[in-house]
Amino acid sequence: MTAPLTITVNGQPRTVAASPWRRLLDVLREDLGLTGTKEGCGEGECGACTVLLDGAPVCSCLVVAGQADGRAVTTVEGLADGPLLHAVQRELVARGGAQCGICTPGIAVCAAAVVDAGACKGGDARAQVRELLAGNICRCTGYQLIVDAIVAAAADVERGQP
Ligand code: FES
Ligand code: FES
Image (cartoon, rainbow, N blue to C red; front, side):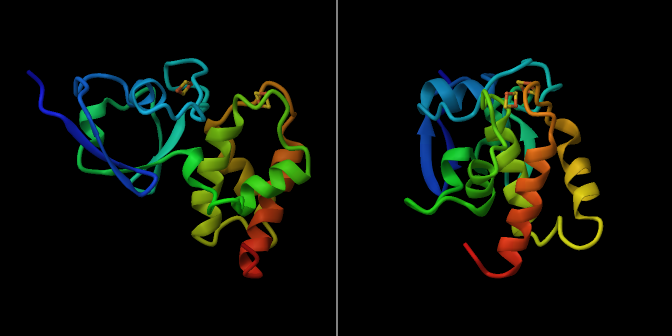
């Protein structure tokens, strides 16, 4: 019998009776019903499944649940503050930075972490964003509008706009 796992998900402690070897991606989507996190390749190449583990982006298809036990996970569902979208989400919507949306949750989570940390601004903001997105593959948008949105979100956060 496996001991339950306790994972703080989007600020709430959650207890999950799952094998420690189950993929974190499956625990989030299937056990906790947080289907915002998407599966693309399932092997660490596309970034669609990105979540934050103790604030750092990880591919949840490559993390087993036991690695998240006692730690904090943030998914795309945890970015908004009630009805108020995170600046990255708001700018992605406003600038058309998503089409099919499969890559979008992973990009939003990853970008929100770095924008909140004060990155992706100044003269080389676009280069910073492109480096940030190196592990997040989008098959639809051509990246231009995604980069526009994240640069705008970084500027919003710097101005103190939520
Ligand atoms: S589904 Fe995890 S990196 Fe592609
Ligand atoms: S919007 Fe379709 S993969 Fe990025």
